[in-house]
Image (cartoon, rainbow, N blue to C red; front, side, top):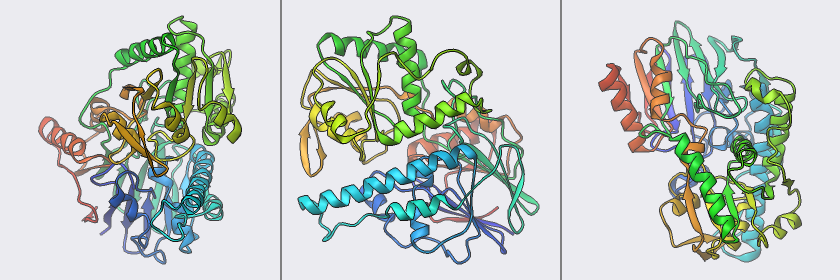
Length: 457
């Protein structure tokens, strides 16, 4: 009898790690980094929570750090097994892991030079060599192509529509089968086709990031345009902390539509994130090559990602010149939760000025700077110093690439009911709400697993 152990992604939207053990093989689905509150982040520094000598394979559902960012830690501890994923995820995860390692190394360097870390010396969780070795383990698999990945374990990916390459994973474990949703996208995604329906399965793991609330696309688009107009009218600029992978592309497409419709002024748009620019190249290539995930309307005509006055900021000096905008502009910079990256420098310069606006366009986990801004913080700590928050802060959840509560339910319940559904990758209230709706509205057996819990599949 196979078992499933929840090693992350329970009680939180980060650190997803789900270990399947058939008795003869072990497969880890997702290998995510914990983010947010300090107790969660400290878990990244503990010994890996599994026997690496018994681990046969890792499966990655997509390239966001909370699903792939712990992989270099396994490599640093000596693991050299295969990592199965899609082509899009392999391309993007290589970019994401390299950038993550760079930021960790840079933060450690700054901490040592400035003395604001309690560690002597401050060290990165992993370095560029670890990240590069991790990417060499990738073994891409096409969507809808079943493949044996370990003794007694078969894998098939289906489109999840969350970011390029994102997939739900269907695992056949002998006579039992499991579907792991990964992060599910939205039918209204501006770049990608909707998620494919899930197959029948004995157990389902479903994410619950927005399991307790809906998105309002029309209202968010109108508010986004009005916010840009209002900020530009007072001579300010708009800073958008955005996930470098997918969120930047979605925002660029929306800005291009609003400019063409005359809904916002034709302002300079700066993309200031090496990882976002590398990701943008992958998305443009996917459009040019007509990848099966891409919406067909993006394959015709001009560059869908160019609002008109797009500037790509590659160097640190270019980024610094954009820190103090002299004229109204729009700056898109990573990271989306403001946990690191160039966006911190922009926040440090723009937050004290009430002419500017900070627009939060995606999920902000508890313990992140973005979550503090959403909660109305009057100051936030950046690089060891507190920065006053005088700029306007606007929150627009509908730009999230995560399915909302109704979309999660619709995807889950289109197929026959599994014997058990495990609601994961959500904060406690979101996960509990989604599980309760599956139980009461659909008569399912849906539970929110505990961290470290082991169950029979």
